[in-house]
Image 1 (spheres, rainbow, N blue to C red):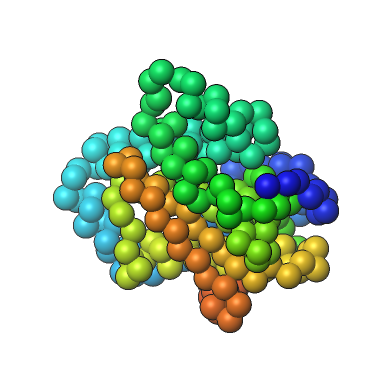
Image 2 (cartoon, rainbow, N blue to C red):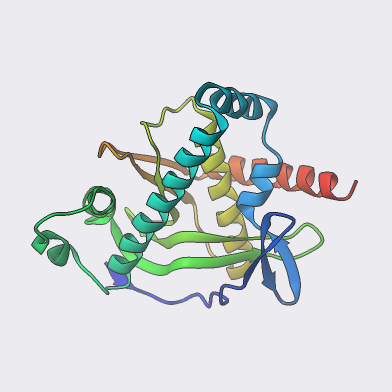
Length: 234
């Protein structure tokens, strides 16, 4: 894989406003893609989350959530280091004993990126869509994946993902927002969104949407943007 820095991504300038992440771009405070999706969850998603919290208890649900967030941050850091060439798989292999998070990151690199990602345009890319209903976000990776211009996100989940899960639909809608922002601002032709997912049990999964399906999720995201601004402008 080779680097091609053909897009000029803005520096990351994030802040939290009313418990929601925002990006400051051109003096405009833009709600993040994830904040928009969180505020506009469907009723079924809210009920599922509430039922799970009630089942495990509030204290345990917070512990699981925080543990997963920490694991995700560490995993992203390892993958980012690899892509930025600060580390490589040989260094990982030389370690006598790897943490589980390192094994998870290695699996995404070996099964999800090697021999599939031919070009890297950016890592941890700050994206934005300006205007009265603007938004911002950070894409894990922009590049050419299996010969297709793609936006790629790395995910970790406590159990395997199924196509029917609301969570996967949210991931796809997130990719719709990122690809829409990128294509609008840079005139790019991203036609594919890719989710590379791994579980703590080291099960690797890949999910993708492309062409018309990606456009469908771009439109779904725009619907969520409309919902978000309707809610905050009440």
